[in-house]
Length: 231
Ligand SMILES: C[S@@+](CC[C@H](N)C(=O)[O-])C[C@H]1O[C@@H](n2cnc3c(N)ncnc32)[C@H](O)[C@@H]1O
Image (spheres, rainbow, N blue to C red):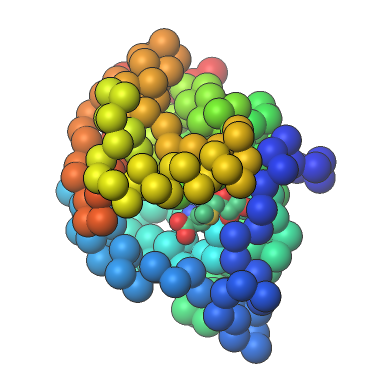
C-alpha cells in the first residue's frame, strides 16, 4: 500500500537465505513437501469455485502459482508487503506462463479492503493465508479476519494454513520448539491458538466451516461468510 509494513516482519526468503534462480524466483525449502496435501485439502472447497481470490503473505509465490494452476476458475491475486517477495511472485508467474500480474502490496494489519486494487476486485470468493499469522504480530491475524468479514462475498471462504496451538496446547513437540524460537526472535510472534482465531472470526460474523489436520502437525482452518454480499 506504499506504506511501511506495520510489523517489523522479516523477508523470510531472499537471495541470501533461500535458493534463488537467476530470474528472481525464490524457493521455500518446504514448498515441494507441503503443496500436494494443501491442494488436495483445498480441492473440495475450491474446485469449481469462481470469482476473485486473494492470497495474503504469498512469500515466494510458489503456492500462488500452484493455486492458479490447480483452481483456474478462481482469479488469483497474490499479495505481500515485501518487495523482494513480490518480485519472486512475479517471476514464478512468468515461469509458469501465467498472465502477467503484479502482486499487490498489502499489509494485512491495515484496513486492506480499502486498498483500491482490492476494492476494484469486488466481493472475494476466497482469501487464503499460509504460514503468516505466527510470523507477524497478532494485529495481522486480527486484520485478516476483520478485512475478510468486509471483503468476502456471501459464501466466500477465509482459509488459514500453518502451525497452530489447540486450546492452549501445542500440537507436537516440534511446534512447541518452533513457537519458542519465534517468540525469542520477536516477542510479538508465535503460534496462534485455534480457539482464539475461531473466536475472533465468530465476533467478526464469520462461520466455522472446517478444520483439517495436515502433515507435519499443521492445520487448515476454513471459515465462511454466511452474510449477504458486502458492504
Ligand atoms: C513464512 S512466510 C510465508 C509465505 C508463504 N505464504 C508460504 O507459505 O510459503 C510469511 C509471509 O508473510 C508476509 N507478511 C509479514 N507481515 C505481513 C503483513 N503485515 N501483512 C501481510 N503479509 C505479511 C511476509 O512478507 C512473508 O512473505
